[in-house]
Image 1 (cartoon, rainbow, N blue to C red):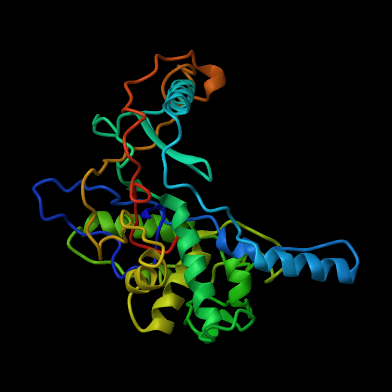
Image 2: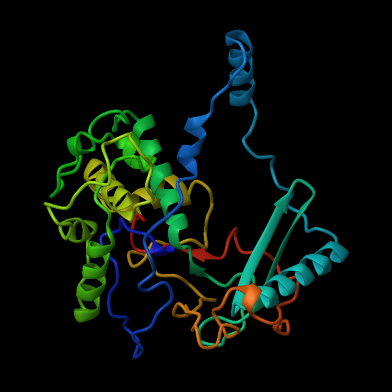
Length: 330
């Protein structure tokens, strides 16, 4: 979430001029889009007989979704092998740097390789923008509110949020699973980027992005008729969270999710301030047609590059993950 990147979007602020001399800061201008992982658990289906389905459903609710990871580290030999895999992958992909962690019932491992956008060596605890993974937190928070009876997943989303365009009765559930049919959002996001760049002293709320959607914009389809990955869905859900809780997105996610999961190295900017070690992102790269083997090109068109320097594979893992939250719900 220090992304929302294509990523976060429901905090009261999207970005603000830093207090330091430099205007660059970790997670700033991160994208606000994300994957709806938490809601995926609602899509379970069976094809066996009724009794068998009920028995399996009962067993599923009594078993944890994931086994409890061990608190001990994996053997050194395993850590070395994992670090080598990480470095080979980084070299093959031609990326500047990466961090990774493995948690299993047999033990954990965390490693890092390469550098961030400013050339600073990465360590396992390096906090990065979580980008579209912010959507996972947004979806989970909506489900928490639904579990408390504060949100009806099958009610029109406009029961909770006022929208400048015709939502055609799309429900909260349809917004969650991106079958709302909402208009595509790129024009609005471009306008947001231009507005932020023009006024770095201003705090941008989620609603500031929603109002930029053209009221006459054509829908992508009727609600429930098709699924389209559209950031606008999660901008709307971020606003829903703030309206229902009568507080900020950051406050809701911190109280209901981050603190309860002991995610001490996840932050929602800029309501919360990340702590070192932090990273500076790198601008997207393109593959020029004149030099298809250059940086930013697909691996198939690029010769292997030497593996970058890496942090020690025995460095303790983040607590529990080296990530930061971006300022929005996407």
